[in-house]
Length: 621
Image 1 (cartoon, rainbow, N blue to C red):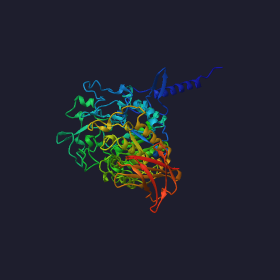
Image 2 (cartoon, one colour):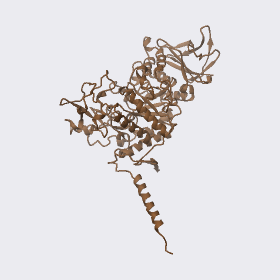
Image 3 (spheres, helix red, strand yellow):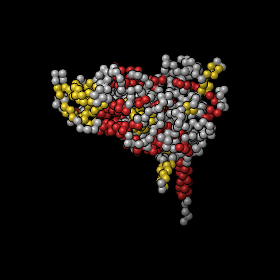
Image 4 (cartoon, rainbow, N blue to C red):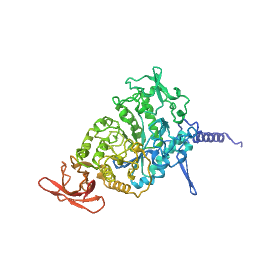
């Protein structure tokens, strides 16, 4: 009987078609021309070990990240903030990525010069993840990862806040062989995030929505001008002149510094406000320190920014955003941007609590509050507490109101102007008052130990306070190393991490305090009531408490230069935190101590001994 081969032919053709489609999807693109996004659903980095050599293969196609749930409660987190370039040089091969030949005489990588790249990268963080877990931190905040302007007026873009292309990894942060391949660069970042997640650390990405790097100047009345006087109505789109199209065209520093026109759509003049130099009188508009101010009122700009940063979540699987320079962006922008981010996250993992907190460089909660209302940010960096602590936790010669511990009480009370309920749908799931991010120093201010009156003793008290008060504590890299700059003029907040030794006194103090916080739910999630404060340096006592009285914590600070011997501390709170005949047991510092609650005609009180510039933490027995 004659065989019918037609069905088999169909099967063969179908198999060939499937093979062709599969091979096409999995083939990495030419790294010199890969400008488009290719999405698959199951591409992961693979790691192989041969002998003593471990190799990680980064795929050339993008896959959507699996969004992990994230923290159950962000108040359980201790954030560790680092300038990636200043943390650890894990990959020396990317230190002069693709531009050494352009600038052989004065390389942009020079660890001896605070203005240059120092070499820190994502591999440096991964190589030292054990250091972070040993310390006890469970979230990291890293500086922006996007492709930056390389050099501007002698300074490099090592910090990440001068974007040239927001959709691409900066080549200084990733292996050199990935630096021209957009997809593989992003996949390496995803590999980094996955590595942090595997070590129970969440990743907060710093992002800039207000500006780009300095890529254009103005042409006004036929004359070129770098920093024209502020003009509220703007100079008009015709005034924008890209540097590479100006009288400077052909200059070597344009290529050396990557001062070229940015990729579309940021090459459109309609994307910029073009109002000249920012003035204090007009904080929303204008070029901040020459940085090109984005027109965030434009629906097109808003759409682009939302899509770009949702993609970073989609493909890297990060857990939060720290948003730079929010005071220079209109508040309604955040109703749009933050809500879009939450909706994306909620649509992909309803259980993920993605946090978004902003930087408003101000002095009080009252000037920042509008950025936390409605569907805007979950919270803000707590600058009011920063300024208060720098006066309270310090040495002095003559006591006075400058050092008043009631400044800490005032800051707690002032949080009442912030949003006092969680955002109704998505986000961190906390009120803005509960989710403020508390810090003692960061990259925009001097190191704590560089400020007058500060030493390692007062440093411990300041760290103890941010780990015991209400909010989310944030530790700046190197603080645990007593890091300070030798020169106030050399960007004292941005010096290199000195080492990763775990035997230092402050390191182990901080490690112990993080554990005390972790072991006591009241220190993380409890309410707070001040028991006693002072109009100058002296006592500051408070309780953190939950519904379970057995979990109540009592914290006593002495910020005065004199020891306090057997001083009576009365409970002035309205919730009767101290009750007669109760016994409180010290849980930190080490060493057994109990105090009893007594009562007289004035009320319930305890007597406590506290050395100058010290603190103790007690718990109900």
